[in-house]
Length: 194
Image (cartoon, rainbow, N blue to C red; front, side, top):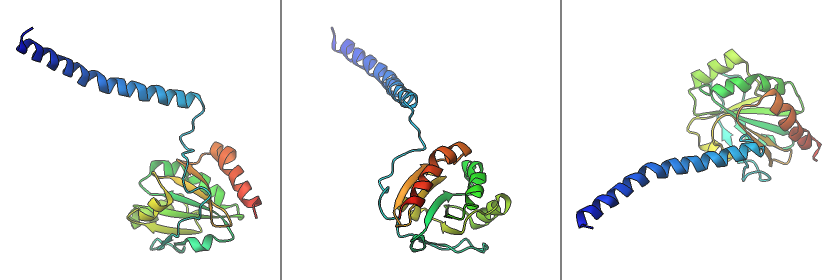
């Protein structure tokens, strides 16, 4: 075989690899995803390295124009607290908002919100339209505090026990089903703990 023929054959093989390698990688990931779903994998239960650790020492200013305080994690001590990370631009946050309104009626828990990378006017408009379930709202304009909490995206909800330690993390919008089957059992455990 000539040198030109060998070179042409190598280029042809390279082109085939460039086409088929990404397709094979995608197919492998799709198979893993399907297997995980079939085994009951729940993407809302992403593990957190913070479970069992003290909540980050978060101090956030209040949302201007709202008659609620900002957030100081020191205020969580002695209370079972739900920390909900939300934003006005977040469509799933709108979906879960009625669940938060329901949770706000449970006086055994302290519900606070971290407003994530949002414009104050938009956040105020969101709460004005949807209702304000939060006892406190802290503004995380740059998202740095949310990084300390290990936030992947919004909405995310953290359960902090009376001892100030993170007991549970829920990723994604809360629904009636996830509230009943997942979050409320965790809240009840936190309430029962000393």
